[in-house]
Image (cartoon, rainbow, N blue to C red; front, side, top):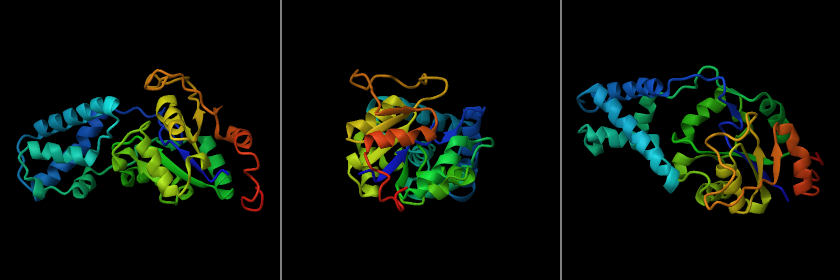
Length: 266
C-alpha cells in the first residue's frame, strides 16, 4: 500500500528558471555578513577579500569532490574551515551562529511551479504523508525559509524535510533515502519518489526499493543530468510526468486501490 510521496525540491517543486543571479556575487554578499559578525564579535580577522576567496574555493572543491564521493558539502562546516584558515580558534566558532550571520533569504522571483500549488492541496487531502529530499549544502532549516515564502511549508508539516547537508550524503546515495524512510516510518515499497533528475532522484530511489517518477523538465534532460546511473546502466523511471496532475493515473497503475481507505476513499 502507498503510504507516502517524497519530492525533490529544486526543479521539481521550486521553479528557478526565471532567476538570474551572479552566484559569486551572491555568496560574497552573504560571506561579508559572516566576516563582519566574526570580526566584530568573535575574533579579529585579516583580509576581507582573502576570506571570500578562501571560502569560495572551499565551496568549489567540496562540490567537486562530492560529484565522485557523494559526500554532501555543508555550508556551516565550510564556514568553520575558512575561519580556521584565517586564524580563528575552533572553540570560538559556532556553526549555527555563523549560519545565522550568513543571513539566507529567499531570492526575489523564486516561486513554486503553478501545478505544484494546484496539486499539493489535493494530495494533502488524500492523507498520504509527503516529504522533501534535496541535494542542498544548506541545512534544511535554511531551505525552509523558501518553502515558507513560496507557500509550500504547510504541505510538508511532518518531520521529513531532508537536506543532504544534514544527512552527510547526496542523492543518489542510499543513506539519504534511508534517512527519509526512517522519518516516514515506512518501507521502500510504500513510498514513491518524484524528482526531475534521472540519476540523482530516479536511480537513487529505485536502488533502495522505492518507486520513482521522473518529472521531465520542459527543456528535456538537464545538462547536469544523465540517462544512465553511476554504473552505466540505463535509468528507467516507473512513470514520467510533465505536471503533477499526471501523477494520479501512474499511482493507480503502481498501487492498485491506493485511493481506497484514504480519507474516506479519495
